[in-house]
Image (cartoon, rainbow, N blue to C red; front, top):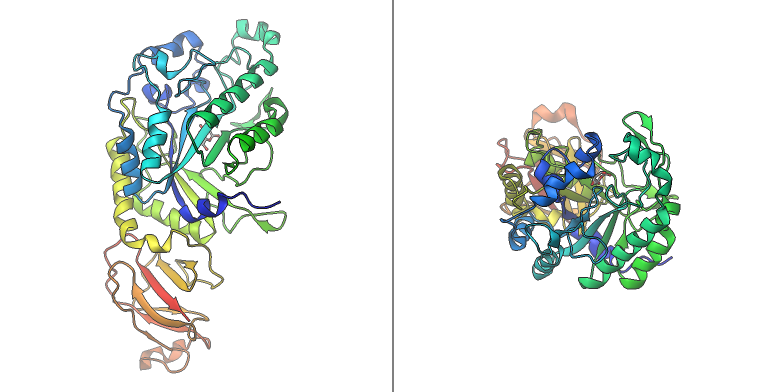
Length: 428
Ligand code: GLC
């Protein structure tokens, strides 16, 4: 099968923003709160009745993403709680019926397009609000005796029609959509150590028809792999693969999704943040293994990025401004990097990312006859080299002769003051 048209651009963009926003942002204790607390509809209704993100400014979200170096975004249209962030005709449980009273998806898509960022929509396959969505071991009403007793009256076919109808709305109302991000299938799912009863997958979603519908309405669209069918790219969640991913022996496009603090939705009391340095390493590591990184922000209920999230994005942006040449359009290299380092490569430019500072020299095997020029990326200052494989540059290095073909970069002993120093190597 030919590659979908959008895949090349998707790979070049490399870095995107994930946004989880919804009624759970008011509860401010993770987007799974309704599951964890077994919250009945009547009690969850309080968030609907008070939904008013008065500080929401789509241009600001997009500006912060763009300044961080992100080239696309994936935004929740509906999460597992079933609340819809666009003006859907298919349920009342949607944004225009809240006190805030307007569509959120349209303006956000418009703001992304204005800055030329790719547009992705996240859509939950689970729905804890829809009356025809059959109970299962993940449903908030899983232990509710009345709901269990009435369980047989729920008919997945009714929910399936709703799901397909909503996807049709989303893919026909907002112009070109680059990515559709379904979440998730769980026919044999183990959750917190237990096999989930009533799990659902491709058959329940009508996945094949849904996929065909998406491709018919948006011919260039990329669909992820969580429908219970293979998609256009795979989605490792909160973990970094050890090597480029493969499917049936062939490289498969992938996008790692990562949180700032372990939670996708705004989680007020969780301060377990990753540092900007660590997140940048994850980005570099991802690109060195031919993947994309989708980094999440869960805005507050007033519709803003909280100060910690905003600060982390700004810090990422400080590095990206001077180093994005090693990220966009770059991918893995066939050269083997030295310890504590990652290579990315774009054409004849090879980028050496130094995660740890290697004293005053770093040895690069196989590169002696390949490099014509070397410079730091942050200030374009020349990095000189020697061939320590031919003659030791100092008598002290006699005992450390390198294998033939090794190039030895001479580094300043003070590490440049950037999150990750990068040496740009021009290859012949
Ligand atoms: C999960 C979670 C969810 C989150 C998603 C992001 O499957 O259910 O809350 O939206 O992963 O990858």
